[in-house]
Image 1 (cartoon, helix red, strand yellow):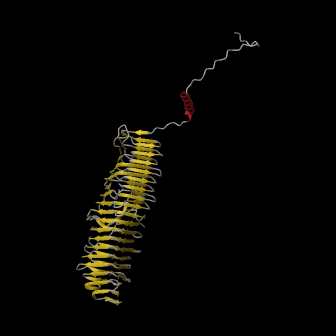
Image 2 (spheres, helix red, strand yellow; image 1 turned 180 degrees about the horizontal axis):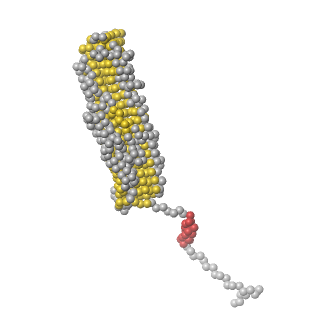
Image 3 (cartoon, rainbow, N blue to C red; image 1 turned 60 degrees about the vertical axis):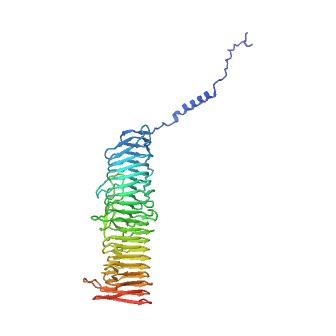
Length: 584
């Protein structure tokens, strides 16, 4: 059929339109493909985590990014090289359970650090073995740096430290054991346990034990404002090095311990707690902290339970000091304060003078393990349970001193005032030459509701001074001196123009020998119903063969008091008694 239009133009045949039969699934694939290709150029390149191990591998220096150390990996770093260092915000996971060969992971360094988070994060979820002969085993340096370790052995055979959080770094460590077997000499004094430095923080939980052996090793230490060691479970702390330091806080650093923490010290002239220019508030160190000095220390200086120095303030609850090597229970240095609460128990049995150590470097730890701390030693007699050259406030404390020439309580300082204030204390001395309470130059002892007993010693109470006054003031207390030559109150006043003072208000003072014996000027006031008694001499004024600067004038003022015994004086000495208000 001719389909030519009337106008004579020929028209091409119309194209046939077929129906679209593509399915929904194919359409979606097409869209996805177009989208993928269109956006491919806009996507960043994918970064894969680096993996290390298994087997023996080279030291790791992860500069940013992420990484993983696989199970059964060993790294031994050459001298001065860090075994593992992560920096620039990187994150490294050390996983003993990671395939293909799960198993123990060990890192070893010489003078470099073993595990070093330097502005980065290291995660150890299932244990690691760290060895070093001179570096720090684990160190987090800088704000934002963090190491989390669950399970592990920290083995230090040189002068590095086990755990160091410094410059704002954080280390969380749990279920770990610290073994520091270094026996460095007195001039090398690192090999510490847990150290927080310059705002660093260490949080320790479920610690199995901390063992140290180096001279002046610190088990738990914090130096600098906002530096903290938090120990959430009482570990076994065993220290065998000479001059070991259990807890050392410095320049505002803080260490927190749970109740009933035990520090055992077999090294001589060691110290349990040191507060150096730091205030340790009540409850910071858990109640019942015990320091045990097991070495008899016959040739070396003896141990000190706790010391405050350089303006330090220290509060302890139910503090315990035990062992044959204990020479000082608590020792407050000039300008410091120690407060004992609860039911503290201080037992002194040493035969040599006590000692303590003062940090002489700026820090306890540094980023470089071999560059660490050093300490200056301070020692001095007497052996004493409560030794005050500053201020001690003791409530509910029991003091037992069996050491020769030991003092239950002692207060003396060349300049300023040394204060000892006791409430409900029980103080007993049994050693030859022992004294219950001793006040020397500028020493001020006050007490109430306490019991002071000296058996076969020098005196229950003693005032002994050369240049400055000394005084003892007791209220409602029992003072007992037993033994053929033990004096109740003895005063040796060598000053040129001062009078020693003793006051007994209420309570009793008894002696088998002489109740009151004075050399040099002494005023004694007995009032408030007090009883002073001796089957021999109530009071005796004595002038010795070597004359004192002043004549011996002993005056007893009794007001509503009971006095038993004879009174007398030798040549050139005077004894006066004044009785008032039914005194007899």
